Image (cartoon, rainbow, N blue to C red; front, side, top):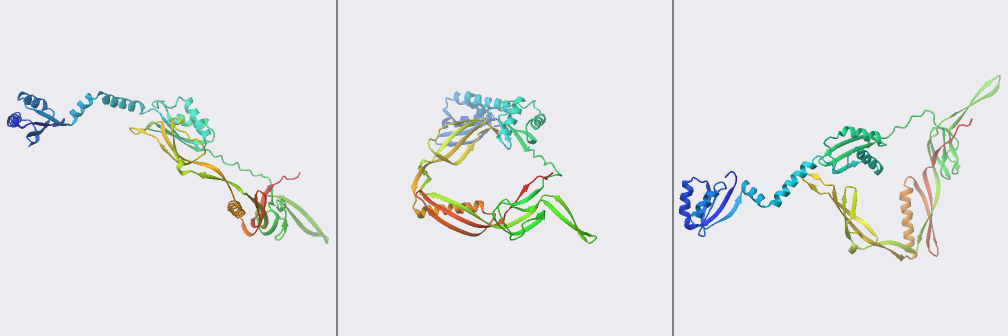
Length: 395
């Protein structure tokens, strides 16, 4: 039964003659049994025609229960011409698309770089549907590297019908300059100097000095006075050199901030019952939204499915965007609620903008207006209060 088997149910009246026929003709038979007045047996598909002719000569009623194996499957395929045609079309498509580019997977730092790479590929007749059979990918790598700015390395590989282009951005090394502009360290706050860590330059404002914003604390012009005596007289040899002042200036300073909170506040109100899914289809670089969403929506979740055929990625993507509708609602706040909201704004400011400083003191003053509340906060801060400022050497 190399090519398959046929299981037959025949009338039990002809069972004796059928036994003798199978034995005399040496027909391979298995799983033969009698059940409910019927003889059930399984024979090879190559012997079925001979057995069928014998049963028909005896006018014996029979019924084919099942067919298994290669030959029955082949017969079923030929009986279903549409299925056979579909299989042939799939094999043809696989053979044709095995070296055809359908998807470009480009890793680039910016959309501008990605578009420039696509332009180079298009100039070399490489686009969706192009064959890679006669394309030298090494040459394309060199052309992309020479034509696209800020690309220092390019690697191209083909994975099925996907052309993968990996790039690394070129970062130019900064030019080493021996001659640079000298600089001072100036105060960026109005405060008092608490400590100084001087690395280079001449200190003009000692510890404990009060400084205004913009005052020079460390000068990049270092003046030295070499004193000598000649004939009993004091002589001064004054010289100057210019450098970039370096060091850290720590001090205490104050900063005043005002946080406003209106009595009429605008907030987002989400509607859980208004959550919906927005579907879109992407073909190459073209996106088609199948069902839109009117109103104001925020994106909750996004799922993208890219189908495959015989291990090949198709240039089609189905995207499901889950969105939730919201509206802007205005609601009134009393003085206590507005004050809490203003204090929350002050706390966010401290976390985002004062994290580099030590808050040594904080005083708050609350003012009420016709439209809301004003929270004035005076901070006493400790931290670095110096910054560099270049200057030109006078001629």
